[in-house]
Length: 271
Ligand code: HEC
Image (tube, rainbow, N blue to C red; front, top):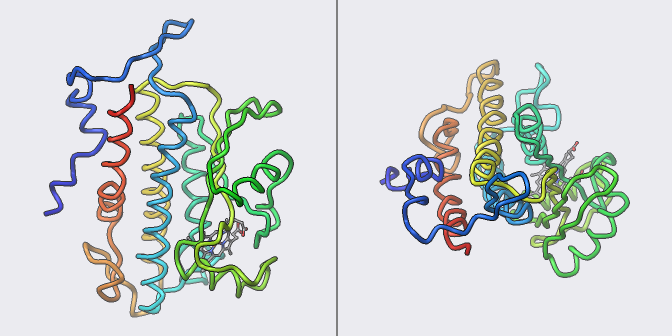
């Protein structure tokens, strides 16, 4: 059953399917002679969609369901005396720091106007644009002159009950009446160039996916060190079934199953 989903974007590219199907999107050639396939806005939109799915899956299927099984998720999850997994925001930060270590120059940041962590408060242009995002929930794109980076912001919605209850009850929260469906913040993505080739696009999506695997594996590695006797069993089952956690491969497989079709549709539909 699972195998039908295993046709990932990467394998599609490696077998050259997209390049041989005639209707390939037209490539723009830049002054440098390098083939450019996508605008930076299009690529950041693709990766933001993948991130939405990953984030919701992690929040609902791991954190939400895991808590019901007695699993703990904590800000201090990396500390030796804390036997817990990363909160969704820290999962995202883990992805961002893994991407930073990769050769792909992609920046990722999660901010808000009412943050738990004051360091996550939007400032300047991003604060202004976030006001717009809250009204119409549409992405915002701009060129950050100071940093010389193309910047895209996408709404981060309270998509699970766990987002709302945890934020409202948090001792450091700056807002206690979040509701399901509220725009709680935005993910900000940055990239230095205004367009990307296929290769660069695939490298960027791959770097994001690798980031999710890296942080998830760090979580599984922490569990190995837990002293408690009822540690979750790591395999092909999910917390919805009991005291289980999926392996990194099973987790990534689900993310791919939920995202690759949409991303692929986008990649092939462009003209
Ligand atoms: C179990 C608790 C918990 C859950 C569940 C949770 N968060 Fe958070 N969230 C936090 C904490 C704690 C921070 C601050 C982390 C840090 O130090 O940067 C945070 C950070 C954030 C930020 C950055 C601004 C800020 O508040 O610092 C946003 C936006 C955010 N979360 C949205 C969400 C959304 C949307 C969900 C559900 C998909 C969610 N959170 C689920 C605890 C939680």
